[in-house]
Length: 405
Image 1 (cartoon, rainbow, N blue to C red):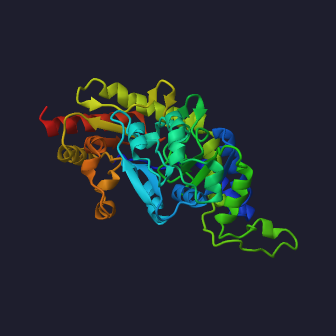
Image 2 (image 1 turned 180 degrees about the vertical axis):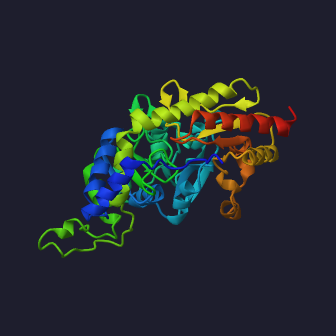
Image 3 (image 1 turned 90 degrees about the vertical axis):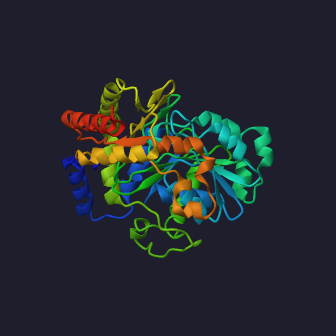
């Protein structure tokens, strides 16, 4: 069976994790701090905090901005549930909007129509690793008529004076937008280092900050370090200094810090990310595209377009002119040929929780159309050319069998 997306665990990673274990420092410490600095340098942002997950990062930043009951957060209907779940956790309302037909990303026109006096945050998603139209979103929130709608309820909201943009970049570390790495293109960017991501730390995430003046990104980082450790003003490393046992808790914070064991994996992966990992993933995308371009039924994903370049996270193939039921049959036939595939994702209004609270998939026709025809193919570092051939043949044969071609 060809797996879908196993992590890359080699001797370099094992040796670095063992070194972290032998160091005697396994929670948040020097490796985590180094990892944060390396991400900041890599992305070109102003500051980065490494956390236990991207989900934690999204929720922490919503809470930092003061999002609460009665507020609204604009979210694409086509994303993983974490993007909207964190809004629910804050007591606010996720306002779903439809997506583009070509690249799965949030529609700028749909965002503009969804903004109300209650809107506090726009949370776009780089689905599959392909960057959203970030300049258009940044320009939208700075338009005079949009800023006039914004009602600030906290000092932080008053400092910004507009809707905050939090980019869910769970898929897009290493993607490029207008010559800039994702992470440096808007107010807040949140990355995921989950086991299936291009760069994994087993579990984990990071928040990269590019907050405009008068914000001090270093001061925000210092606050977040306290807020993500139960509100405790000293971490374990700080308390190891002689006579520094006493600490205070300044507020009821959260527990979301990253550990040095996880950061050890991340440091190895980041060092070889551009010159090894992304090169291999691009080769897989290019191979798939070269094969499928011969077939009229294949709608291959957009992964390089003008000033945008993907992180090559997931290869989202669509089959033209089929139903959701036919797509599911094709997937089953592919599995029967010992190839694991997936679907990214079921749009949020299709999920029981969101249906139950009143969302209707019929309101998002583009999202449903893209979803109903989408099959995600295996992309991982150790995927061989022979396996790629097996994957493409399994897809082609399964489509032909289902459609009677």
